[in-house]
Image (cartoon, rainbow over all chains, first blue to last red; front, side):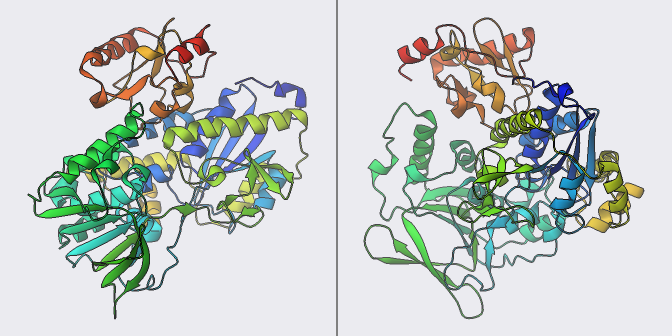
Length: 445
Length: 101
């Protein structure tokens, strides 16, 4: 990236407030520091722990992906970086207040809100958002008290993305396959008692249109007690032929699905991939009993009997006061990372990651995205530096009186070590603290 | 598993992969980039970013390309990390067209 010479703007370090501590927040921070400009970054996080979806989204049985946190820790060690944990922007401090004390404010708030199916029966007991289940088994403090009743024979997951596959895989695995992961212990206890033997992964499109990746699909060949199958109604052998044989990802995905279609149900748990079905309604007296789908081709309806349904049809960014919202895209209103009020950019307000471009792409995609946002910030600062009424230190001093504790990266390091120690005793990489009071207590221990 | 850079990179070296690698596991020499299998976290971000389709997961490599796994491991150990994108090699666009990409 071209290095703007920010020395010329004067006024000492450029002070940046970044809201959110997931991948995009860290990569935007990294790009700002790497620019060579004299920047200082305060990373605000409402929880006492960093890493966003790497901690609360990435599945517990995908530990290699979590090694990316070593990179985040390295970025956090850069002089000029401060973690400001336990502070909720929008409640403890407003975006406008931050803008008064920082040269630039960057939203890196992700996409926390699960989209709804918008069909009848969605509020019945046993109907859940996949994202809530993911946050629950990953020990997110806001979801630790949720109850999932797995005392049913069948579960249905609506959606054909990688989150749908995560949910299906966690349901498909035995407790022994999960015991040595960093899954929250409350979740492991419930999953160990699960009666679910039949999992349906249902999508509107064809096999080629499914958004999940071949790498995640491949995991279904390795399950100890579960076999992946295709529910063939409406599927022809041609549906597994790639239109463009030069697309290795597509060819791989379709050949895996084809292999599923030829497997025999030889294991006690079965995972059915089903295509071309749009959900119409969820039915049941007290709780979910069946889901009705419309077949994409023709008007036929098809019912799936199940006691549990997880909708996994995408996520939206949570709106926040002081930041215009793009209802259509479900993100903070922006053009290339500059937050927009109508047709004009709001001075000193930026966005990166999923809250900029929507919930798609891998961790690496957020790195490229963060670099782009950092470039926009620095280009604007080079052109004109806003005058700030206050300073970050004065603001943080005021904040200290408003929250129980401002959590530093050092505090997190203490908590991190405590979680690893707890885990080591029972053969897990870590045993997460789930409630915020427990986290804060471990920091003081 | 790991992801692996293969022959299509030779003579192009677009380095789009470097921008999207979350763990900086790309190395390079004068002809191409290599992935350090010890640091790759299998996120898969790089494979679709490559303009010439040079990057594949190891399990997907054809038998006659498996040797790239060892080359990546060996060359990554011998060459420096590349942390920011570089201009492609001269003639990269012509080579991309020749590869039908």
